[in-house]
Length: 77
Image (spheres, one colour):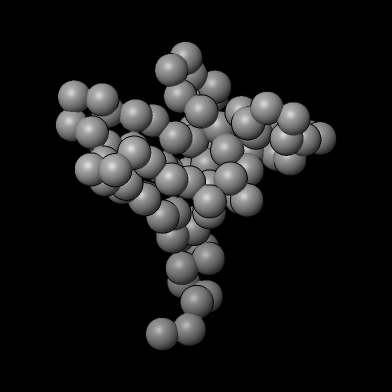
């Protein structure tokens, strides 16, 4: 394992995204993996990011990384 591990117990996969909860707004925000591990956030692997579920009445905001500027230049339209 080269990167940061998934925060889920017993998961040995590398994390690919970071999850943050905004309790006051009943919201979960899932975005690209943060540059550094931060307290009160959860780093998740691809499997656990895809399977994310939240309590009823909550909303999930998923921020998607579009890649680097170089990757965007070579992407077909």
